Length: 473
Image (cartoon, rainbow, N blue to C red; front, side, top):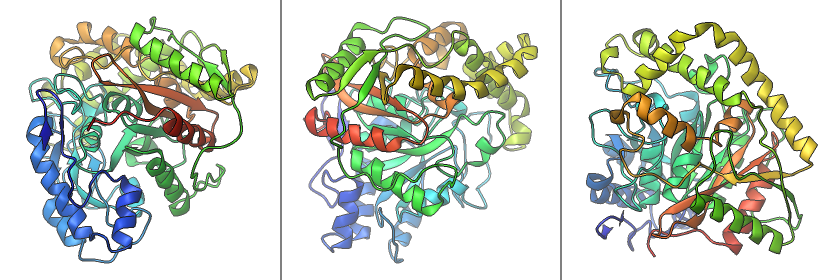
C-alpha cells in the first residue's frame, strides 16, 4: 500500500500492475499472468487499503479463488471485480446499505444483471458499500464508519456506488459494478477520478428493483479507470442480452474524426455552480473548440418543475422502503433504524401523497422533453458539470447532520445527473480536471437515447488529448 497522510492506493508491481480490465484480461489470455495470480493480487490489495477505505461489505475471497480453477471466457475473463451490495449474488446477503435490515438472508440466485456482469468472465470478490438504499450522494451512515475517498480520505467518495468507486480508484480491482438512480454511477466516478457511463434506459437487463418502479430510473453498469473498459463492457452487454428496441453500439475502440456540435450548460435549476467546477467545464469547452468542435450554450433539457417532480418521486421511494421494507426486502426489518434521509423522505411524501400521479406523469414525459431539447438546440452532446460543487468533506452530506440540513445541500450537489435517469438518456462522467489540492473533478456529457457511441468516441478523444488524473502521481 502506498499512503501519504490522506491519499491511499494499492498500485504495485504485482500481477495487476496499473493495467485496466482489458489489459489484465489480455495478460491472462496470453499467459503472462494467471487468473489466480490476478485474484490473489486483488485480495492482497484489498487487505492493504480496506482498513482505510471501508469499501467492502461482504468479502467472498475463498469462492473467488475457487472460481479461478474453472475455465472462463469473455472480454474480462479472469479479471477480479466486485458487485454493489444492492444487487443479488447467489450465496451472499444483500444489505442495501441499511442498518434496518437485520441479518439479511443469502440470495438463492444471481440478479439478472449479476448474470450479465459475470458473463464477461469477471470473477466476483464480494459486495461493496452504498448508503442506505442508494438514496444519498455520499457513502456515509447514521452511525457506522463512512467509505472514504482514496484521493483524500477526509472527503466523500460520492455515492451511491461509493464502495465500488473507492476500490477501483485505489487500484484494488480495475473495474466494479455500479448502478445509477439519480447519478450513482457518475457522481462517485467524478469524486474518485473514474469513468462512469450510464447507459440508455433498457440497454442492460433490468434488475428486480427496476421492474417494480412506476418510472424506471435505475441503470446498471460499471465504474472503470479507462474509456476502453467502459466501451468493452457496453459491447459485452449488447452481445449478451441485446435490446432489440435499441441500436447496437458495438465495440468502440477510439475517437472519431467527426466534429460535434456541443451544447454547454453551466448552472442547474437549483443553484449556481461553484467556481472550481465551472472553470473546469469551461476549460474542457475551450479544449473542444480548439480541437474543431463547435460549443454553444443551451438550456437545461428539463422543465422548471423537474426538481419538484423528481424529489417527490424520490420521497415516494423513501416512503416505500421505510414503510414496506419488511415486505419488499426481508421480514427482519426494523424501520426505526432507517437513517435520517430515508425517514425524512418518507415524511415529505406523507405531506403530499396526492402529487404522486402528476409527478409520475411528468417524469415519464421528461423523455420527450429531453429529446426535444436536443433537437431544438441541434446538438450532438451536452457538456455540463457532474455535480454542483466539488466533492465535499465527510459530514457535509451525512445523514447524521439531520434531514433539514443535508437535503438542500444534497439537492444543490446532485443537481445535474437526475435528468438522465428520468429521461433515460445516456451520459458519462470523465475525470478531466482537478481541484487546486489535486482532487478529481468529473466532467459530464449527455447524448440522445441510444447514442452511447458518440459519448465513447468523444471520451476516447479527451482521454488522449487532455488525459486523466492518476492517483499514483
